[in-house]
Length: 121
Length: 121
Length: 121
Length: 121
Image 1: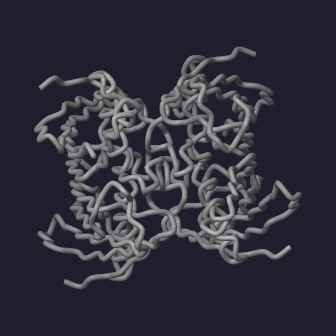
Image 2: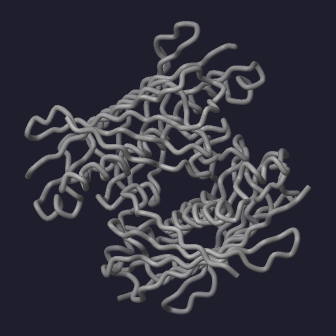
Image 3: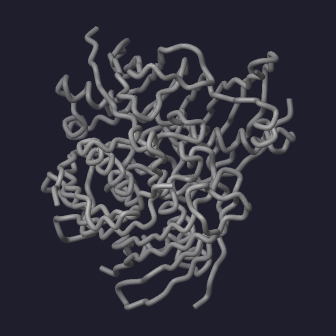
């Protein structure tokens, strides 16, 4: 399974008063990385739409090992996995570059995974 | 011009690392308050949609006198003003309840205004 | 385990071009409901902060059975579960009121769950 | 006054049910472009923070001529203008690349401007 690397520069508006990126925003980065992967594989949004393919997200799972902070460029490894014909799972691995960690948590690596479905009508 | 009062409880995800509500979120509160006003006046979204009325925002102006913080319930006074037949201006006044102010700014009252257009095709 | 009901009115800015609420926003509604529950139980944010309690989210799981739409008022049932002394799990059940469903998915009920940690330093 | 070009790829989560980018998100793109400009000029956030410089936004003005859509890469021209010693104005010009326009509005070019203050304590 091929893995793609997508980079996201943390924006000020993505932080919260805990001084880290708000946990809901990683779910949005998943989407950015998934779009990037699908484009690279020739299954961009508009091509899928033309073919009548909808791709609602069915399930999200995320484990927060630490949080990214303002000034970080998050590196997101994304791959597609476990394609069943009607469902496809995407797996993500987010790492932040800067050595500073959010005080609340001890480990460096953020690992997140998400599952979504692509359905053909 | 009748004024309506709409209340918005500040959410954690609306704050940023400056410990205040991120300035982009007030633009969203405008929309909440405008929707509230239009509902009260019997011009709710679905009624307008049925009548083919689109209401894209044409112009936004906001002055930030201070910032709301987590724990505040923002009180938003909203009124419709200056209706020209194709355009309507909404005026907003946002006040936060708590005495704590964001350190960066000195005054208590936030005043914001926004203009939008409602067009009949 | 006591269950609390929190209501969230869907906002226009929470929708996406699929005409439903973007899936990342439910993660934010979890936070609203959790805050509401903790307030009701006398463990509001500022009280916890005074006691040095941080509550970073460690894990999120969400299953999307359908999507809420503009015009809905989402009803969120929230309860705290499985408290281990350092970790606490919150469970959510989101239901939308309106009969209209997002075309992409067939079932009515949205069930989502999230886990978070409250740590005492 | 030197002008910088910053590009922002429109994300799915930035769209709303009108099939365009929600108008509040441009305010966030302003911030991205301003950060980019300040970095290029050697006044990045962390350098300013070290020097005790806070930069709360005091005023935002935006004119929406049309809306960007999913699939667009927005090109944002940003320049700093009218520096008074305590206040600085940033001017933005956002253009979308794709020929498709949001149905509701007729013109091609989006022009937006924002004013912010950088204060030295």
